[in-house]
Image (cartoon, rainbow, N blue to C red; front, side, top):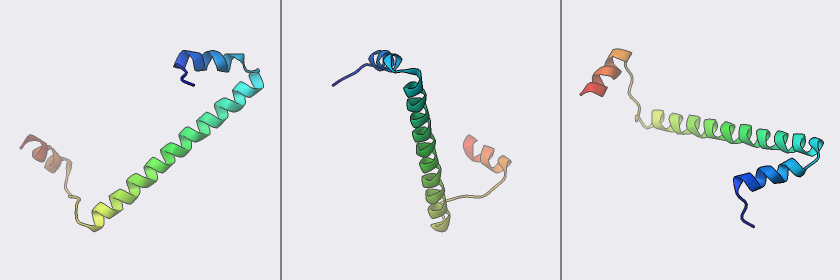
Length: 69
């Protein structure tokens, strides 16, 4: 079954209000979990990069200098 976004919205509109609320809650929780996992993966990668020496330190002025070179 291949639904368009509008088809999906129309299908949700046919649900009773209580089921629409449950669906919205489930979707929101999944979005939050996905974002949480992305943050965790970013932290893990950042720590790995730091341990491997793949990060640089400096001031904002150093950053701006590097960007203009």
